[in-house]
Amino acid sequence: AQKITQTQPGMFVQEKEAVTLDCTYDTSDPSYGLFWYKQPSSGEMIFLIYQGSYDQQNATEGRYSLNFQKARKSANLVISASQLGDSAMYFCAMIPHRAGANNLFFGTGTRLTVIP
Amino acid sequence: DADVTQTPRNRITKTGKRIMLECSQTKGHDRMYWYRQDPGLGLRLIYYSFDVKDINKGEISDGYSVSRQAQAKFSLSLESAIPNQTALYFCATSDLGGQMKETQYFGPGTRLLVL
Image (cartoon, rainbow over all chains, first blue to last red; front, top):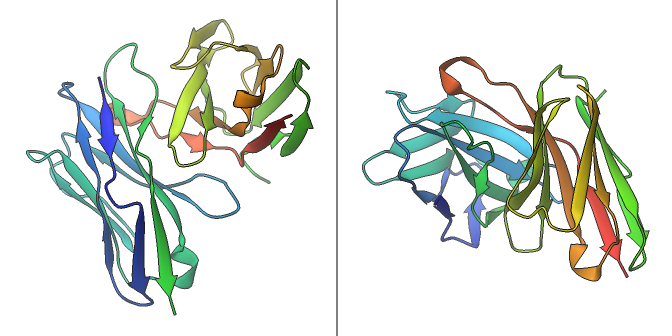
């Protein structure tokens, strides 16, 4: 079974500072994908970044980077230079790469608040 | 225009009523999904479809049914709504890319309240 754990229900960060949101996962599948999504108060789910389990380099997308440590089964999201618009819920998710496993497994989320 | 749209965006209904939530996409993706989100929880999969003739149950399909009317349309029905189906419902689409990369793109969500 797949399990995604986000241990930080809430985080605060000062504007312009960097913040790390933690995510650990548990899977027996050798190949999988890891995702982070942002959910603002308006409710939509916005795709931020993807990391494949066999990717050699950590993924980056603008101010977002994923600190992937495969041996520790962690996939932390780093947001650099936080902005007020970054205040939202953030969800870590995983999809196994095998036939018949077609849904994303989500963590319970971390609420990030950016302080001016 | 949004790539994935959901209608209605908000709905209030009564216990026992049948309702339908609709999803349309212009991304040209074959795969479509329905999830629900409950307060304090992540999303859980209800149903998914890889093409018009392929429908599969997800983690929590009891009490729901779906219809894939076309590649671009995937609807979710609650045959007899009950209060614990009050939730935020998301439609998502994806296409299997290279190196097994499959990113799911979500619609704006439908807030459903069952009284």
